[in-house]
Image 1 (cartoon, rainbow, N blue to C red):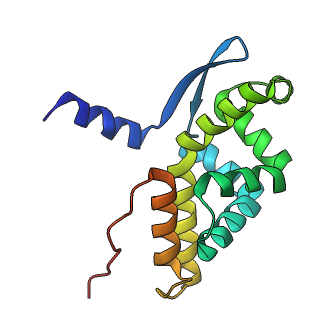
Image 2: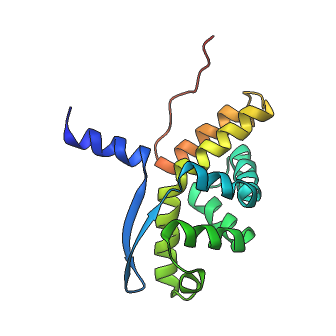
Length: 157
């Protein structure tokens, strides 16, 4: 198996990205399972809003993320700081271009984290597989995050 195949597997299992922003090197990581459990409550409104946007399916993923960042600013700033192991105050002090770089890196790393929660929430709610259902929302999210259209999601039937 080619080495780059393993690198991709590692990125999926433990996504992280190191960037230089605001004069420092920062590694943004997805939280561990236990850490994620602790964030479940505070992030519920973010996941709900992401699910709503996915059901509507009209905005690009980046537009949706920017809207979420505004609507859920305090929670997302706390979570963004946590994932980069930086102080929230430092994050808030970044100039626009540096803050945007951090924001985009955060969403790149965290896309799988939010996709898993969105798909689980849709499945638990028993949403239908129709245009506004769980399958369509998950396909929108995959397409929006990767820039590639996903293959149809099929059940075993």
